[in-house]
Image (cartoon, rainbow, N blue to C red; front, side):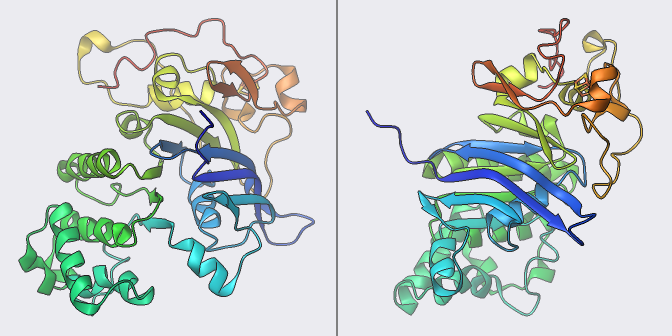
Length: 330
Ligand code: SF4
């Protein structure tokens, strides 16, 4: 059987800011593919370029280089009505539900707005559709007449998810969708996204700084550092046998809930260097406990290690890659 067309193909995408002679290299040659119904997590510390990449994928800002294909069509050069028409296939759930909803609009108007913009159905059909969307995200119909300030953070994010679903997109791009929420309600929103993903078969790019969160919901993980892809592979493999020192450090930063799971950890020290002046060679070398002379001079390319895993590290596969890595992810 022929393989299904990828929902999203990102090919060697670069996004630089500032003067070409000394640009800020926010995204520096990222490729990834997402297939129908697949959830891919994009993970890395704040400032690694993952949110910029999400915005470039949606063409909210232009790539400096590279190609973006959405449902098989190249959207890199599209503009105006053609871009607008294609963009309905990819919808975003934003990080901050406080800032992303218009405070002057009712919940019904917020969720209905994409249907109005794209003139989907008659007005009465749109009202019925909004009611169904609100029910789908766990909000009773009475919420339709409320304003964002009358809702909790979790309820606002549910409204943001309902709005993202309104146009029946093929892919949802969720940019840190739970990081602004109370810890107590994060699991509810994550479970809702997972239920929707399973039920509707919509693909998802889940952007997060927390590899512990995405371990539960993604099929594959892509780890970014300073604008570059460091490691990518099936979630189970990345969590159990991480091959890049940076991935290991992210996993080691997850709090351990039980004393029996404690083991030696290599925690990340310092902050990433500036993307306007990235280190020569491997961008992770100033913070890497495994670094050798070659790491300071030559940038490692992303290499396949088989099993769908690729790693950008001169030393991969690491000799002591342990099957106990990630045991604390529950
Ligand atoms: Fe560390 Fe060298 Fe691998 Fe970079 S290439 S992650 S510095 S061991």
